[in-house]
Length: 517
Image (cartoon, rainbow, N blue to C red):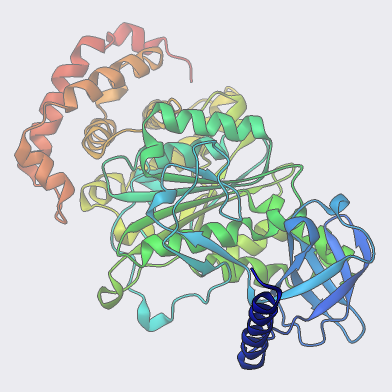
């Protein structure tokens, strides 16, 4: 190419380039950046960021995030949602302009995730529908309906004496190793084929314990309708703090679709301890038992989100089962008393009953449901009315009998009947019972049919009756699940089946006279 033509092309190219530069509109995005001043386990102090908002999400290097929690004149206290050793003093911190949120969607069902919505089960990417803030206001009073539908746990003592309704908040509390998680897991397993979405939120639990729960859920086919949200004991305290809020936002996604949802917080003792640790590191003044003064508000704004929505909002419900660990049976400690006052009742597990082998170790006297009775099936309420009183009378008389006190025949009958009730309270783990099975056994128990059977044979006789209950006519099954009491004819039909089944296990009068009281 001639030199003159080459020069001409170069000039033309530069001319076009200059025109493009002159006509180009530059878009500037402002960034507000701060600096890390100090680092503590789970908490970072940051300078700068004059326009940051309370609970705004901040981004650190190495893809770490934190929540702005203390906003002072000279510095910002940030709860770190990750491992603090990855940061250094002097690192940049950038505002994101949004609050902490979690991805939600139907694809999360059957998966194991962390509080950030990231999968932990090695099953690949989870498609999200949208994102919900982890902190959402509780539904207004006018958006709620009264709790009217039962949530069957499949556990005899709870469904009969301490019933739970859909939309209720029922606290489960007791000392370590008394079976609190077992009750929650049995309740989740019992929701199979009942159109209830379940969320199990493990807060600061040992990975071995969580793996055991997941294995039980998979074995019983419950992972098909369950989401497991996990934080381990060695996770950052910030992740433990946001875990129950993130799980609740995920539950609300399903509730707002008109579905019934059950959420288990296991446990809020670990949550309270994580918040105490963060608060002390943020130099907030400690209060009773070194917990910050707003710990009641922290838990109340979480549990107030459990409710029964009205028809205009889809009639969905969110039932909460928070778990609390007590020490030396002290239910009057700070956190247990807080949660007892927030929730609609409590299921108390007694170490003494656990040691006696009465499992689940539910202490009927200290347990109560303030709402569930209104949602309980009439078939239950018409049968169990006198059961709690009979058991209380038995426990009072039993103490006299132990000391060899002479008692009359009437008192002996009360003790005999009470022993059968105590034996009836026992139930194997991971074996929830259906409503017809429970009703059949309850009717036989209250009618005194088990009083003729030796205590040692209670287990096998009850198992035989449960098998026989599967043959109940459809008319009786419909009445059990309806909102009407069983008729006398239907009761007599069930009792006839029970009497025929239990006749093979009855003991003679001579054997009965040798029973010890």
